[in-house]
Image 1 (tube, helix red, strand yellow):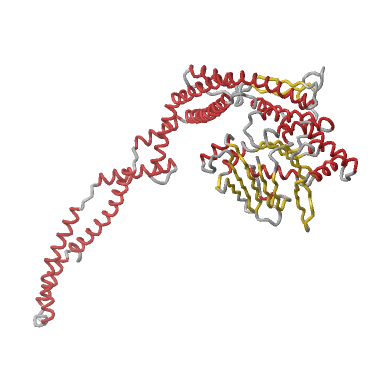
Image 2 (image 1 turned 135 degrees about the vertical axis):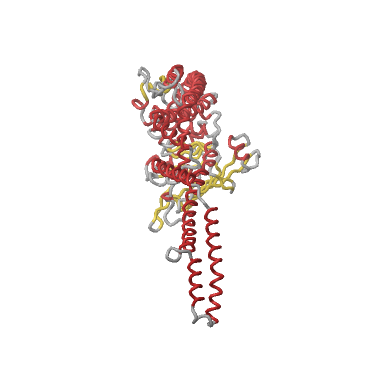
Length: 591
């Protein structure tokens, strides 16, 4: 049960706290007073999507918290204990908090420990069952009806296994279709891919070969430059003066000086002449050494030519492939190899995938057939139990049946023209089974209603009034309550379209339900309010320039006055007050 609900800064609620009764809690109030905000607060608390619009003006965040008391056998105890959030006791207190800030950040806590939103939703599913007015619309939608039948299954394991298998089948089938499309696309390009691959394969590119080829070409260019320098230096030595070597020219220079009588006694020039005589052999030695170095550094012209040709081949392939580096060329080479390998190996690989799908389809078909049998029995239980509830809810002649219909759906074909013939047969059997089995099984269906004796069965949307739909939904809730794991059942105007004697019956049914579960009911009917163990009134008040919603727990006399107001409108008269007391007294003596 919820012992306390606290709300701060949510919509038109500034701050309020509600302490609930463990049995039937009835909440009344004028239209627009803020009753639905309580439902919104509970949805928010249990993980519903929310944005900053829910934050009350003037507040930096909206905050909702609730305290629960859980018995040891409750479904959520084990889950919470596994995460270290509670210690198992005969009666365990659980405090859930959630808030959202103006920045859009949402945070949640269980017993002051932060938790994820997905975990909050998982826990919340077993704590509170909220029936809102939208459930009436769902009941009018035939596509939702099978879900109601499934709630009457004694064992839901076959349904869970089927949904898991069908999910796996469709995932694998989607991947198979994608791979098949890829195969056929590459198959059409196979000749081009093979040509490109053969061209690269014949050339045998590699990072190492490219680096070596580039290095040879670059070294050759540098070596040629060095050879030229050596040749020029040697030429100066050998041909530096009118085509004669510098050594020969220097010998003539020395002879000319020696022959001059003017210079014979010039000590400085004679000193220079001696150095000149020594320089000749140095030049000859230098020329020799330059020639020897040049001869040792002779280039292999064939090797250079081969390397330059291979480098040109690399550059031509770069342009053809639209790549800019040897790394990109290597990646392209590997890609071509992978795609050709895929084209060659795909028929066998995809055939194995199809065989896996066929085995899963066979398994799913067996599960679907078992589920179909179980649903037939569940439908009988549901119809029998709900019809009994409807008779108790003043629909004496009403009958309900569930109209099962076989699933028929078209499964897009697979293009298996390039595969072995047996694969077409495997796929034909798979397609036949999948055409008869959806994610929910081999059947769909809807509830049909004969509201009065002598009337034929027709779809709910065509024959059921708002009040009848409300009673049908209450009948389902009553029927499904047996063995349910939830703590709290919340009804938002379950009594729509109901009045008079039927309203008394609805109130009594809710009271009966509250002996097994805590029930919170938002209502506009005085007959329902009379059955409440706790009665709350929601009011809207003006606070400065803003509007605020408040909630008050009424004592016995205040509750009678509120019931009188519901009976007669805003004006409470002595007769309406007397009627209210009679309603309360009748509610006390009817159970």
